[in-house]
Length: 319
Image (cartoon, rainbow, N blue to C red):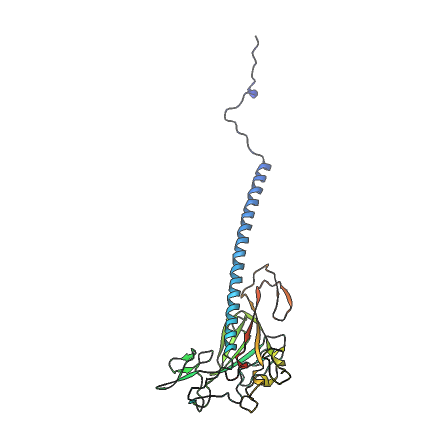
C-alpha cells in the first residue's frame, strides 16, 4: 500500500493570514467618505433651515412692529382736546392745524423746519403727524391724560420723549405734537431703518431696523353727491403728491362752511418692505414689493412686504 508523500511546499503553514487587496481598501474608504458627506449634508441642511426660520421670524417681528408704530402714529393724527362740559377750555382747531401730511419719496432734509418733498416715486415715502395733547382740569391746574408724559415736568412728549413746548396761552391753544417718520440708512451700519424725528427739540433716532421701503397711498373722498353731501366713502386712491394741499389742513374748520376738505382723507394704505440685516448665501426669494413689482432677489437677503390700511381720524370733525 502506497502512502501519499507531502512535499514541504504542499504542507499548510500554521497561522497563515490572507491580506486584503488595495482595491478593497479603496472601496471601503470611498464608502466611508460618502457616508460622512451625506451626514454632513444633512447637518448643513438642518442648520440652514434653522437659520432661515430664525431669519424669517426676525423679519416678521420687525415688520409687525413697524406696522404697529406707523399705525399708532396715523391714528393719533388730528387728535384735539375735547371741549369740557362747562367750556372752560373748549378748543377748536387752529386755522393752520393739520392732522398729517406726506411726501412722495420722503424729504430732502428731514430736519428742516419746512421740509421739502423729494417727489420721487422710487424712494421711500415720509409723513408728518400732528396732534394735541389731552389734558384734564385738576385742583392744581391742567394735568395731562395722555400716556406720553414726561413725569418730571408733567408735560406731553414727542416720539423722542422730549417735552412739548407750552403755547403762549395754554387755556386757548393746543400743546401741539409733531412727529416725522421716514426711512433712512443708519450712519454707522448703512442699513435702512424707520426713523422718527420729534418736533420738540428736533432729535431723531431709528425706531425699527430693517425697513427698506415705505409706500403710502391715501383713500380720498373727493366728490360729493348731487345734494352736496359726502357719502364718506373713498372715491380714489392717491399718492402723496396727488393729494391737494387743502386736504391736509384744518383751514376750513373755522369758516362758515366748516366742512369738507380738511376731512377728505379717510384712510391710509401702508406698505413696508422689511429686510434681514445679513444675507444668507444661496437664498432666493420671490415676492411682490410695495410698488406692485414681482421680484426675485439673488443677493441672499430675505425681504418681505407688510401691508395694512389705517383709518384716519382727521375725517371726523373736531376729533
